[in-house]
Image 1 (cartoon, helix red, strand yellow):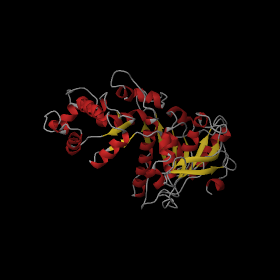
Image 2: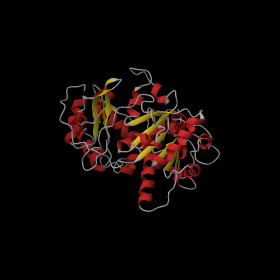
Image 3: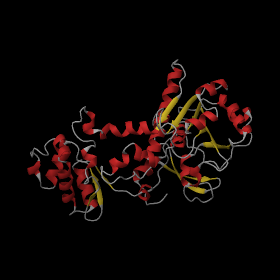
Image 4: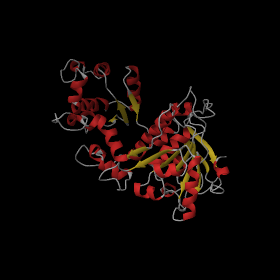
Length: 394
């Protein structure tokens, strides 16, 4: 652990998660599906990951200490077993079909045509004796785009996020795989909902998560704007997040984030910077007014923060109880006193990669996290004996 913060004793870690005993067959690759099954593993599920002979592409996305063990793979596939199957071989396709009845959940992120060829449809799985929840994480639902491939960048463009990020002028990608990971979270939520429905006596159903439609729903909650009304009452975009002045504010020696959301926040800040004369200004007296004049609000705040240091502002903002934050780098997080106290980061020995740092599950059950995951597997680490039903059930 870097930084000067002292390591405190770990908080309690639950011996098991709420999905303990759930068997998941993970036929996904890249990011969206593996993120879904990572969440299921963190919740206690047993996840068997099927990989092609070359391995999941994320094994090779960034340099690792050894080939095929990239940092992204180490994070995304912890807690899973790796089994290599070559679906160009009839014998391996047969192994897959024979294994299906041993699982409670089967998830893939293949295009529908590819999944159908492998027998990964609700009807074909039932014929193979499987009662598993089938989760299909696809680029697009049934319709004109159904057979198109989809990746995070293309989906960010397709569903409008790149346009939103560029304020309708200069399109830009969000610098995290937001489409993939959001779709993965929706998939995990839908799987858990279907399992709960079946436990309550509901009829079995398959689950399909189309990335395009899912991310449209995710983003338009606050960005639809005037397009909410028919006919449109104004343009799209949420004016506060669309403001070009919405960014961390420069101080004398750095930057600070500041959120003047409520009337009380605004009034306290104005009093602190000697602009109490604006408290009753009709442009700024209400949240609705400040939102309409958000560029002026942000400009005023920016001009007010430049003459003091970040440390001085953090102390002042804490005293007046206004939401604020120091701008951290990812390296800063390693020594952040809160993260150190809650022990979110874990340093441990990986069998092939030496000491690595991983992030524990963030959710708590009765105040405790589920148990730590086993290290991410090497390619095919658990292939031996997979064709044996006894091995799969062990």
